[in-house]
Structures are given as C-alpha cells and as structure tokens.
Picture 1 (tube, rainbow, N blue to C red):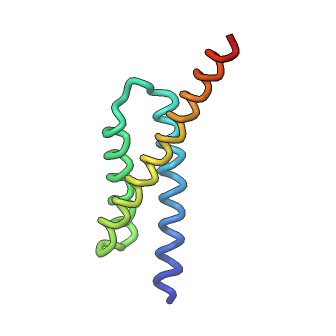
Picture 2 (tube, rainbow, N blue to C red):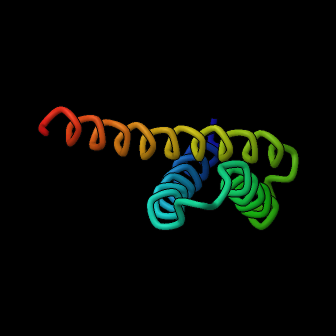
Length: 91
C-alpha cells in the first residue's frame, strides 16, 4: 500500500512537470515536430523513474509521460485553432 502511495506521488510530479514543459515547448517553438517533444518527455519520465529507483516501472512512467505530453500538445493546438477560427469569424 505504501508503495502505491509513493508511486502515485511520483506519477503526479512527473505528469505535472511534463505537461508544463510540453505546453511551453509547443507554445514557444511552433516549428518543432511533435514527436520530438513527446520523445523528450518520455526520456524525462524514464530517467526520473530510474533516478528514484523505480526501475521496474520505468517503462510505464515513460509511456505515461508520453501520453501526458501528447494531451498537453493537443490542448495547445486546439487553443490555437480556436483562436484563429474566432478571429476569422470576427472579421
């Protein structure tokens, strides 16, 4: 039970950091390919898990980081699209 609590805290920490990093990268570096950002965040998750001795769940942490990164990038892209669409409709 204690292991699950500690593991969930690590997932929340990495998820928050990866989401913030992905949002910043996709907002500031518009020309950077999405796959590069996702792979970078997956590496961050993998190395974070290995740093804290969670080697058995490092691949799960990497996949989780990739999914969170993809969701964050999608949020930025949808926000940009909605802003452009609103400007076109406004005239």
